[in-house]
Length: 392
Ligand SMILES: Cc1cc2nc3c(=O)[nH]c(=O)nc-3n(C[C@H](O)[C@H](O)[C@H](O)COP(=O)(O)O)c2cc1C
Image 1 (cartoon, helix red, strand yellow):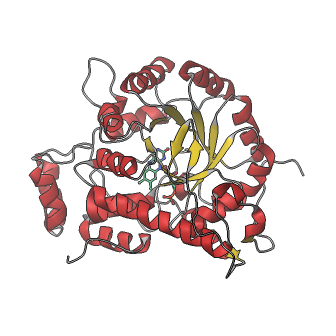
Image 2: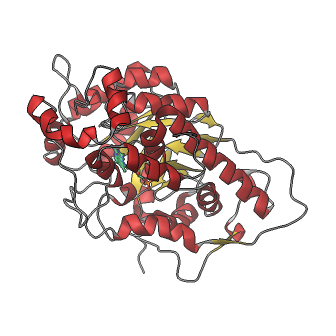
Image 3: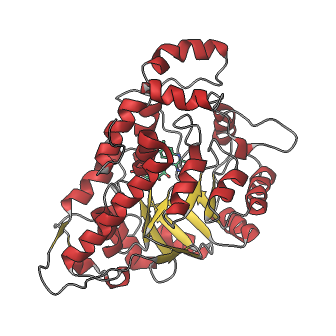
């Protein structure tokens, strides 16, 4: 390809689709069941509009902000995703890109790279945990992240083990052994650049999850840990508060869409919450996160840092979320497409596309800093918002 630079997240996605083996690409598309939520996450941003200005704007705009104890250069944080088999450098490439662009990295406990390597690449790393295994195992994984230098903890609470999507799920083997490699070979051979990147490292993706390793054992497989997680009873809010206390530092609850639960997150002592529906991969039929953000921001915005993730694909989406009450957003697929398209440089490219999109949206509406944004900067059509978890 003559010019590896791309101008939009949509183009990054097209390139990732061309470059990645079909099953790897399809694992990133993800979604669940009918796809109502994944679709609404992006479509809802398109329903919001602007009232532009044409003269009198400030010549410069300040995009910096402060989230979970960290100063970041733009209001976009890397949302945790298990980046299995997308690129040999996986989450380390993402962490380097985020560090190069001055922002923080959420590292999934299902990641393919150890937290120590990721923190070395980006000291602004938050470690994400699921409620999986015994309390001792959860604390031990948390303590390992702390020892590695992670500066925040993200507890992702929204998952209900929904199975299946109408457009089909990729076949994910338990482990890549010789038999699986032979089975996968025809697919991989159609993607020579992806294959070349892995062959250069003399390693094939092994689908293990090193950050879920118990002391004295090998890194478990993705499926082994998924089974453990399915058998773990979901936490109570008292247990969430307990974990927050054990951690002691900046703590985010990820996956809240109800006002009553936003209040529980505040009561549990969380520093931040992310209004999230897991990028539409969980319970299908929940509203787009941008539709529920205003009610949550109005209820708890003064008591906790409110973030949003789900459907962010352009800088204008970021500005809309901030205007409706978020302090920052987190991105998932947007950076995964960048990573799939062009490795670390592709993630940097996505962050640059978002950065310039934020800057031009701010200029267009005549705002010179993020703190000035209010709901009045966005045209919200009647019937757009949803309020969950407030007694009628
Ligand atoms: C392939 C994939 C894997 C994900 N893995 C995790 C995970 O391990 N932990 C987590 O908290 N969220 C995970 N998520 C959800 C993201 O953190 C985030 O909530 C979501 O991707 C945001 O929506 P977006 O992709 O539209 O930006 C994953 C999402 C995708 C697409």
